[in-house]
Length: 568
Image 1: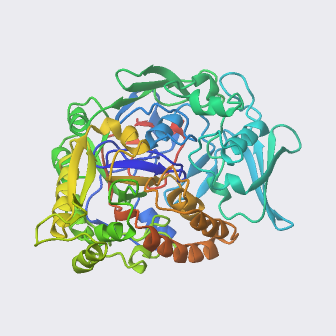
Image 2 (image 1 turned 90 degrees about the vertical axis):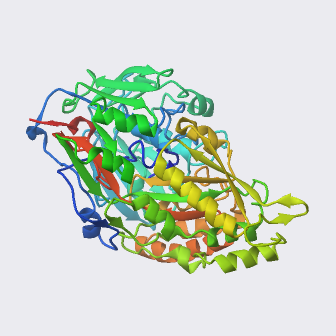
Image 3 (image 1 turned 180 degrees about the vertical axis):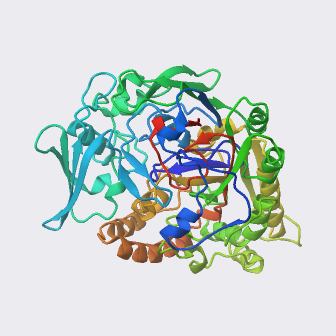
């Protein structure tokens, strides 16, 4: 299964669920063990689900390399662009400003390498945030990191200029102005009213040299532009043909020296990545499936790290595909799938259980979570599914037959990616379930490296994938999941009227109130669209070589790139 990451939820990110690491943060820890299960409702619950090896720099040695597999090196290196992926964001962090740091539970901290102070105020009913920028901070091309970077990031993502193909305007559309403060090294961001999720914005910055929509859309295509970056590392080598990118220490960096000599991403299929870890070619890999865990659990000199997940794995239905333009058909498909069966396949051999997820905006361990999928009445009910298809005019001659209407069979293209056996078993199970209600889910398997092509071109009727959240502010990105112009949810089931309802929720300045009213609206939208079906969240299980620090199953953890390294 592949993952499209949410922008903080920052749109776009992909990873084969049981293959390449589904990690947007840097973390790890001691050998994990025992049962991991979905928790509920507090910061402590979130922290309890993080398993990583947080170590201060003085405990780590200088030198060494770190290599992992990736499903793809995305053609689009701009994470703000609609075609960006989780891989885009993962790569971006290694050679661009990382403005924000996050604890495992999602607590936000300013990265003092870039920001010396952040002040948040309410001024005449408007949220105002003042960012004071480290006077040493500059891009590799010599451009100062100042208020203009904040302005450029805002104007590129606020939706005013439709020529910018942005992943999302969430939050940025709420901003009234970005101006210089006491000097150019201070950015004053004023919102149009109260805004609840300011810590989800400006965690990445866009160099002012990216001056217009054409540059925004095209300049980063298959070109990382290291000169526009900044940080402890910079690009060493990018090999498009072999699907690899590596980073070296940046001699223009002003902060603590990067501990690693080099950091490398290599494009690999799922089966290749597990073998590469076993052979010592890569230093960490996902072990979040029975097959992968079984292959590594008895290896020497490794740690198995277990934590919770910041991902929603889902089944997406493309309303533009034949027969799926009908809400009754989509609803029937959702009611015809027993998610508990899929979860048993996914979690077999992992010593993990969880309650079926019910939201794309909150996780079960976060305060305010509600099961909005259940409230929408979309739970498994095979008889109700069959009745809906009958009402929609799709007739089934006898049990086991594929339904027909106007001489056409109810056949849906079910696109799958990669060679992971767990994902294949899940697809077959869904195929069998839908056959029982007279739907032919025709499986079409493609290489996992084609994720972006399948996803962005909507080359599917049904597609199992995921949304990965890189921060805890789920309702800040409500629109990314449910709005009609969303580039993350390609079901095509939303309407402009729904957009207006979501926009009203975004105006609520109190986070708790926004979550409460947002839950009500999410349940309503799930029922009215039946475009995306939450399947499971799952654990994060990572196998790492012993001694690796600040990398692993860290939940929302985002640390400084220069602090990832090997213990002394």
